[in-house]
Image (cartoon, one colour):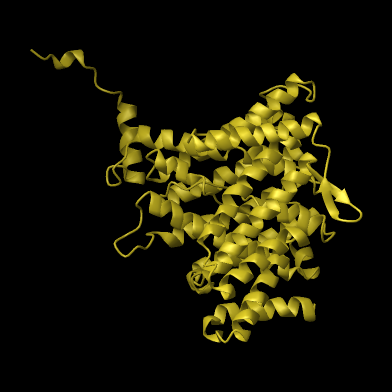
Length: 448
């Protein structure tokens, strides 16, 4: 006979917590459990944890304090992801975006000679505009009106931009007076470890092992330590001070410098990045409604745009939704509890700053090259039979790394698209959105 007295009831506080989580995240309605959501959140965090080391490394090149950016990265990611989880109830994580951080450093600060404070001001204004576009529901009109070929060209271009930054940072390619770039000394330990890291990441990702990128970075760092290339600094400590970057942005300086094209570029890339990520993860997680629309889209966009504004105040480049969220969805994540779990992981990561500071540039460069592979792969969707579609893609993608500017790549890409369509007798493909952006791009080069 069954004796129910042998099976102790769960503690009262546990029942209360479970009931609260059920009420907030509607776990039963989404066919998931607390355990599944937590595992999914940890999986997502592991796949995107590389940003904790990569982002401070990239922004340090702009003259920003590594430790302060490390803290800003973790806090911005935690806050943005938590808002996404609680407000929109989506298993989508946010963090400073790859490509956008490279544009911040190598395009705006090093390329244009602007201060990082002014660059943060540009990030702030792009976030404010994104927030307004989300509030007034203009974002959908802009995104839907931009041709898919140009969206792809922008993604591929950013991928190529990341590739050249990674190869340059690792010393694989170096400058040359006659040919601009050439092959560096590929026999140095740093270059060999760079390739080792890239091979490890690629192989692990192919095998669908969670955390492939961060595992590759840590393995490369360990190898560098073994060969005496890295000085041991410890693993755990109290977080560094965020003081050097907190509220150091120059909001009005960005406007006085006339960096409207830069603000537009930050906004434009974030718009596409966020929209593409939300659509992709929604399809994978079967989160779309019967009309193939994403419920609570407005809340998700508000979470993303407000995260960019918050990130600029803390001291980091544009914060955006991460496609790595799909890893957690593949593990069963369906609600905002997955996102909240990721946010908690980012807070815990604050105490591992010594480890992040030990990671060498050639290890993060491996991650940059791998991320570029993922971004460039979208070029397979282009209709190569229609030159009026494929040619602007190539122009957009090639101009970004060769001009060292995402903004110039976008501007020249739109001009190419409009003029090729016009001369080919396909002016009907040029909608109002493309026309306006093309005119603004022309003004950038002719008037400004």
